[in-house]
Image: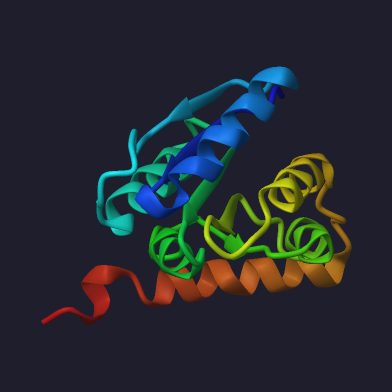
Length: 157
């Protein structure tokens, strides 16, 4: 299956997102930019949600989401059932996110990670396969069970 990317950021992640777009184009990864489209202040939940929903609907293989710290947009993405978003600030974290967690959304810190390092993280994350060892799959299955147990309708009054 060809890899495709849902890409999004808030204003603090905009410049890094634009660099990632150039890298994706240079390496022939199809992507859709879900915004934002400038440095004008916006709210990261809006863009993290768009990326996560597109991946959850299987319209895109993976998502890459960027905000200032990477934390907020990662929290938002992980609210969407079926998403395993990981904030990666090192190559080692990118490898673990894919091999152990089969992460499907990569979150990055636009203000906290050197842009050259961030591109190396993207490359590593996109080219590292899930290990498929039984222990890792067992843990992902437990995550899915938790998602089912705590679906939105189960705890909102």
